[in-house]
Image 1 (tube, rainbow, N blue to C red):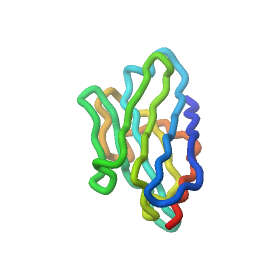
Image 2: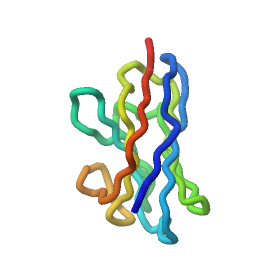
Image 3: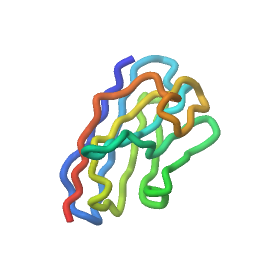
Image 4: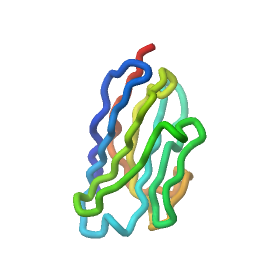
Length: 121
């Protein structure tokens, strides 16, 4: 399963970006979709997920980021508002192992190539 993430770029603090993640296959709707990020020199961490139970966010992005999906387009999105310099990272989308995949890295079997988000102060 090849996931394609896009939408990253350079933005000033306080600005917005929307990331997209295209996933192939007729069964897209059956799986949770998640976003993780990895800052330079740090581990990859959970950002948000959308599964059959709802949407869940890391505390650091709650209220600023919104995850959504369009099952007709096989695409997941991450709308990022009020961006901060500490949001700078490579953002990865991932497809869950099932419909209820959560916050854990191991809940996700397939990953996109990552898209770089840089927030300047």
